[in-house]
Length: 303
Image (tube, rainbow, N blue to C red; front, side, top):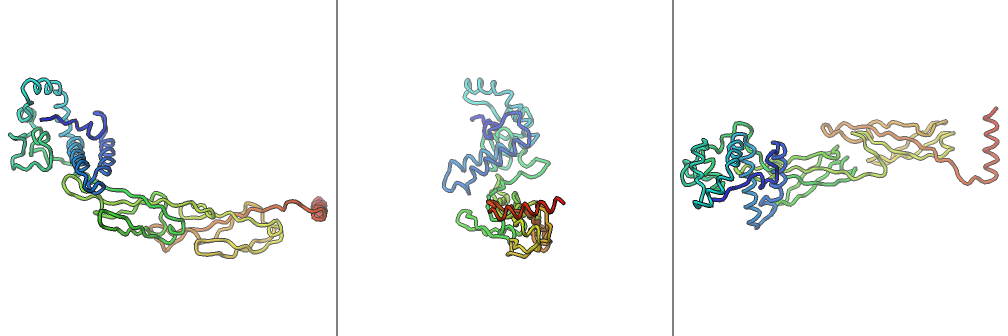
């Protein structure tokens, strides 16, 4: 019977932490899951091996027993080569692994695990974990939407095998928002299904900069509007609005338009604000007459 290096299966070092094991397992489980590799028997076999490796290494008791076996690996190699096989059942009996003769558990149910697992651990070890249940294989997809779609909400269709899922992206979503679709992930070794997560990315919008639920817009105005006052059209995500610019407005001044920002993700009936910062556009290429007038103004202001 062939020895299985579970650390090699997951592609981690023997000193890997629980977090590193979990990350490695999830990454590989997504890659080799049968849902992602239909009609690929090699991927299905790899997925089973990953589940078995994680079943052992994610459980402190199983991992300790497995590492103890690993310390006897040289002995296993030499004895196996000389006698034609290592007595896994005897090793399990000596080390409390609960192995049953013939590589199965007391009920005869192999649980989908290999003969190596059953011979070393046996049925008494499976399901003995006292912490959280075996983690399911969550699946993550990504969707990119416009800022306007983030304002109004959007829908994305995802293919899952022969089915199509319609996922609603709520108003107020931000970069990194994850929408959970329960039970639409992959299945773990016990058949329990994980969840599908749709991770949202938002295209940059040349008109607005988003900060949390507020929007910021830079509005160019003429020197004459800044000096004398006037009205300017300001874009919002629901159409243009008119903004009154008072006389003597300095470049960089910000105007707050209440409720013209983004909807709040947890309460889409509430909205952030839109901040409009004016930038005075100075005239260029003055004519001789214009220069004379500006010089006259400069003399008046100097008095």
